[in-house]
Length: 80
Picture 1 (cartoon, rainbow, N blue to C red):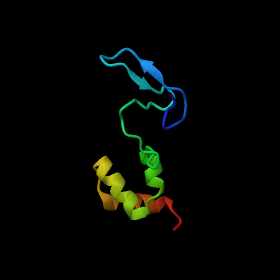
Picture 2: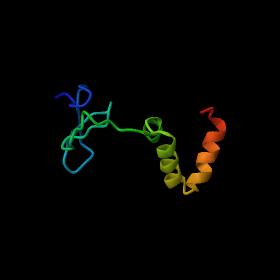
Picture 3: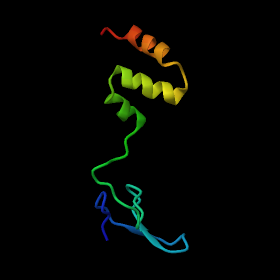
Picture 4: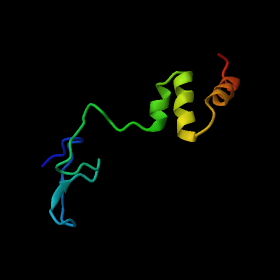
């Protein structure tokens, strides 16, 4: 049987109560939904799609720092 995500061969995992087919290449496990159009997006990849204000808000919330100070720090290194 082929993996619906990456088309590699699925392996039967017998280490569970109920044996499931799983893919060791991409991590797919039988019975989980497959989102082919939505990939896993890292924080770095997400931040590259943001403008300066959105990036500052995203980082300030995640790092628990002041948004305005972060904007001043980011603009200091930018020649915009």
